[in-house]
Image (cartoon, rainbow, N blue to C red; front, side):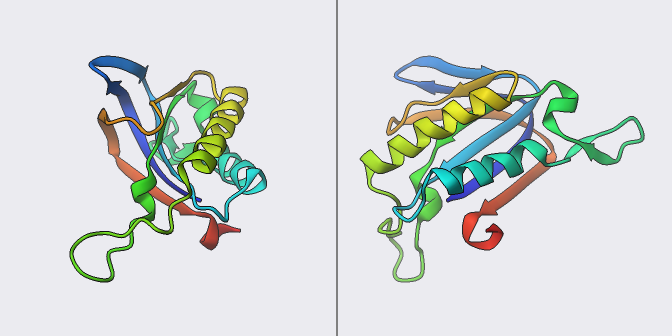
Length: 149
């Protein structure tokens, strides 16, 4: 499982000509799923995200987690996080999870995020989406379950 996490001042996602999710201060989380992933891996990844201390405290040090700043989260499915660009100029996506399996895990991640975060918003699985954000920092992290677990 791969996450790209961006600390944002605001973010929104549009699909089919309308806003589907919108948040203020918090995280924009892009989620990539492989067929080797499962709910246990998802739980560990989400737990890590919920405890990361990457918001500034009163002294300007990155020392606060999202719950300490009353932050929100926008979760977007993004199979392209499993792009393999080693050969040629056209990426291969064979490492990405099958659509049905990836959607099942994405829905599970949304459920768990809904339990942990103040406000959880989402994109539309498999849709062409337009994502807008104001990156705070910028502060972007890449979390890969193969490197973390």
